[in-house]
Image (cartoon, rainbow, N blue to C red; front, side, top):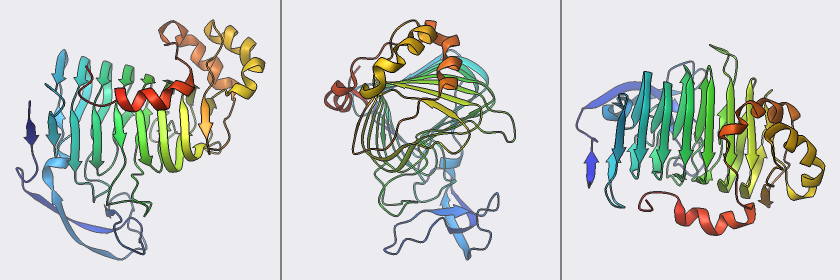
Length: 322
């Protein structure tokens, strides 16, 4: 209950940094000189809060729950690693993890964990990822009715939006994302899959999520990623789906719902629920993603119609609704 404030409690870190991007009017993020991030860029000394880089370790069979609508964890995230399982994180606001520094901290990390439920939380002002998995398996994970608030004065896109939304890079990821409100972001919504340093495999169903005001891209599936979208609403999303990174997405809309009926019924035992978009781009129908997801049809949720999402999800997502 109340606020757990870790900011300033564990000292400061000093490092060499550079501008992640140079914003003409200021307000961008800086990035530490790791993994070649500052190659060819002017560097400078920087300091930031050590607490953000040292997340709270969560063991198996734990529930972390906020009491009331104003339970806040400030300055630290959560780390679910090392084979832990049966964990619930609910009804919290997680905020202020070095939002000015790209490597300043992640809100929720799931790496080598199973049976995880992350529900009705609000995440804002994070240095890097709101939600990240990798490189060990993240299996039987449900991420439901969370608000990912990308509004920030420190924008890697120079437009007041947060870029590092979600990264799914586990060697075996099985996930359901439902009823989440993802707004004022500009990328990685999620970035999923890939090939280095391990072969990541991602199987994820998105149902009744609400992407609102995304100045860059939402879903970005790379190799070995299979993303299945139903009943999700995309409003003012510049690029709903990246289709050039080698992964697969299946996202029917009303105009092609009848033509996908047979494939959906064969794969998941029912017709697909159409997605909807407003001022947004193209939606792919990669059959490989639908076929891959058929192995998980017994655990899929059935979404309600996408046109109900804008009026329901913002009122249901985040803390205070459980």
